[in-house]
Length: 106
Image 1 (tube, rainbow, N blue to C red):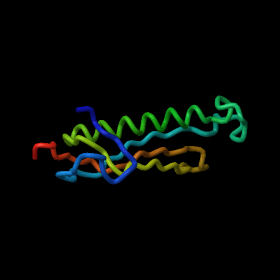
Image 2: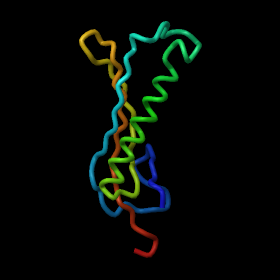
Image 3: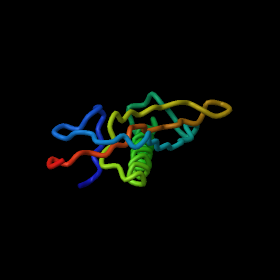
């Protein structure tokens, strides 16, 4: 079974058998490179860069869940926070709860 990732606190049709830990993935972007954050063009506004950072953060979170032998990550949320001395760095985080699931026969 592939790792299930959901923003809900449960997995439809399956029961959580064990909570194995909180998992986090992070990615930092230098926002000083964005020429016009209010532009409709995703290349100029940095939108594509933020989307890419979310994907990297999500993959890191999933990798940590797999290391814990989780079968799913529930209650996933994304957080975005400006950090750094001049608030020019955007920290993108994906956080969730790694769980194991009961098989239908259990």
